[in-house]
Length: 417
Image 1 (tube, one colour):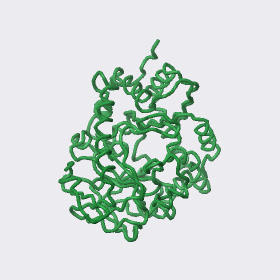
Image 2: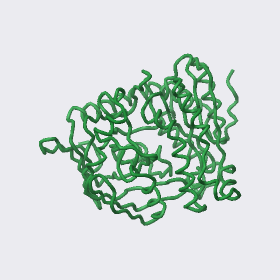
Image 3: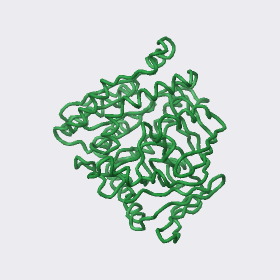
Image 4: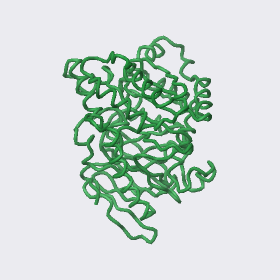
């Protein structure tokens, strides 16, 4: 017997159930007997219940939900001692890492108000984020190393909807956000699992083409941008469904429109300007312009949120270097929606992007067998952060540069060439 939805009226319960089914069958391909660790906002309980139901139908061993709450988060900023902001629940993350070491799958439901901390002290936000990132490292290494099958999906939380559609009544805003999530996640019509199979095949063909060329670097050109991103030695392009070290093929991000790989941490040169705002921990960072030398950001500014950007860049040695480069056509469904989601899971799928910080170990040939030292030798970056920001648009051209210096058009005016 299915649980009642308990979702607000503007959220279609049939599509919500499809999203839960896709999260388990496509996002995780959860295996019989496999445990699942799930994090989510309290507001996303209707989706969490559906996911748990589909997980147990798929044979899950144990589903363990861990909830967060916006009011509890704000209570810390309004009432906690200053010393609180240099602490994090390391014991919790150690437990999660232990679960992943035992082959538990990981699922995160996102949906919190992206501007929740916009009115709080930026230095406290930065300190709390740094403490959290350091404590989370044991668990993050299992995820970034692709040891396990993991997945992200989104729930249309009312506080998020109000940020996106501030001129609409709350129920209308929630309905609009729900429709946008369902459409981008390919669950707005029947046959969602089959649609994902076709989409994954299309992304795989892009990866095969790029891997066949084995470019040494990518050259981005456009307004405010002349950037050469050197690619890591033995890099491999991935996108859509990928196979984790535990042998399970999963779709880490739902939605996804990108193909991505690992840059070389020492080989990015030039300057680049962001094409969309970055929403980071409650702060909107817009008009980002940075310059790279020897793979490292040596100059950085922003028209909005510059102080937060600079604190991010000072997180650790790897925070000023790239851990990911991703290609997304300007005609992607999320781009065509014209919406700014203030959420990286969606906004990164509207445009080509780069990510500061930690690389993905899986984006190397034989990546599942490489040690951290071997990944570093090939140019993989290490950091406590991994933050994507958009540099693509319909005015950006990209060339692949071969080892002999030859150039191949990859994108023209934001579309595959």
